[in-house]
Every structure is written in C-alpha cells, then in structure tokens.
Image (cartoon, rainbow, N blue to C red; front, side, top):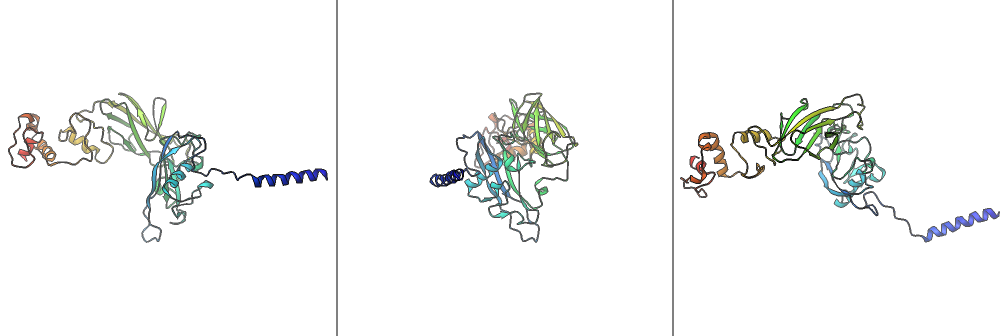
Length: 361
C-alpha cells in the first residue's frame, strides 16, 4: 500500500506541475529555426499553369501563385522552404506538416480529375523522396537550388515526370553566353562551345527529356548541378550526364546506361562571327545573331561584347543594316569622319556611323 500511495502521489505531483508550467511552443514547419543563421537562399515557385481539357468544368489555371527567394537554414527541407515562401506571400498550404501537400490556395488534389494534385522538382528533378526528405543535411538541397511546386492533371507526365519511360536523353541545353556548335539535339553527343574572349566560366542549363532523371555536368572530377556556373578555360571539356545508374530515381532504370554529351570549350575565337556575352545562342534567335554578325550586318556595340538583345532598333540602325547588305563594298571602305549628310531629315548629321546609310536609304 505504501508503494501504491507513493506512485499516486508522484502522479498527482506531475499533474500539478504540468498545470503550473507554461505550454512548450513547438516550431511549425516553415518557421525560422531557433538558433540558426541562413546559409544562403533558394528560389521557390508555386504554380498552376496547365490548360484544362476542353469542356471540363475544372477550376481555371491560377498561373504563378507565388514565387521568390527565401532564406535557407541548416535544418531546412524543401517542404519548409515551400511553406516559408507561402507564409511570406499569404498563400494557404494544407498537408505540409504531414509531409504531403493536398491543397494550395484552395486548389486541392482531385479538383481537376482523379490524377490531379501537387508535385514538384528540385533543380528540375522529380526526386525519389518526398519534399520533407529533401534536406540540406542530405546534400540535395543547397544554396542556389530551385524548388518548384506544380499542379498536375494526370499524375506527372504533363509536367515531365514519367514512370513508364526510361528515356535518359537531354531534351534541350541552354548556354548562358556563347555559341554551341552544332545546335543542340538529343541525338548529337559532341559539341564545341565558343565563349567570348576572357571568359572563365559558363552556366549550362540542360533539361532532361524525362525529369525523373537528374542531369549534371562535370569538368575533370568535379560535378556541377544544373544551372551552376562552371569554371572553364580554352580547351576544357564539359561532360553533361543524364541518368547515371548510380544516381537516385523513381524509375526502375539501373540497367539503362546514362546519356552523355561532350562539350569542348573554345575561348576567344569563333571563326567568322563574334561572340556576344548577352546572347543565349540556344534560344530561338541565336542562329540569326550568328548569321548577321558573321556578315557584318549587325556588329553589336563598339568597344563591348554586347549585341543589344531586346534593345530598340532605330531608323539609323535599320538603314545601316540594309545598306551594309546592299552595298558591302562601300561599307568596307566607309570612313564616318569624312561622311557628309546629304538629306533633309531631322536627326541626320555629318560624321555618323549611319550617315552614308541614311543618304543611300
């Protein structure tokens, strides 16, 4: 009986003590971890961009719901980064605390069909684990990472995630500055990349045909993630690899060899065409820039490596482009210092790069 009385007394004491002690506050996911300092930032995007099937009575696409950079802490996961951005933007996220997001901004799984819901990528890769397991400590999430949460209508293939395909090719390759020759194709595996004079690095952004497979690049023994700035010099060889069998994936593809692309770097020489630092030569206009630059029709801004992508084309510049094409001999011997304006158009003047072109036009 004495032992029982002691146990009851201890239990009562514990109950009384717990009633006197203030409740312990547990940090919610997305909160700033206590005692930690940021180690950098990650870019987070939450979007719903897929077109709805014709005739379906589904909620309309929301577009980009939230996007921005958030601080990254040592104990963070991709899930906490998503919630941190959502909190900053006032966007409601349901399910993150349980490791599975079921609704964002009122748009839930199954709202657009039985295979609809929220999925996401880390640096354009559909990870083989949930967002809560993609952590800084695992080495997958790091400063500069891109975290994208997206709404799917059919379980992933419409976002580039396909469990039924083991295609490990690279669908496209974007080069920050430089000319890739030949133009990128998934079936071509050897390239030359010409960079502007003085270049010491280049950013490559490869996109996997099936984003269930990671894409990385390496120079020598050092690997670089997608979009990272890669140190290079003349003669460097960059190897772009998609789906190395030793890398994690949701697919059963351990016996499927990786696809490899070899890029030899050439710095400061591009044959007959200059290389402009503001031109993405893998974009739709890249070949056209090479064409007009090689022929001297558009030479970029004097004393710089800038082509002027997106700049307004003036009447003087347009006249000069047409004149250079029509009268290459005159252009080759043209000296602006001696050129005289022969037309009565406001703005035209002696001694300008366009003077002869304006007279001709």
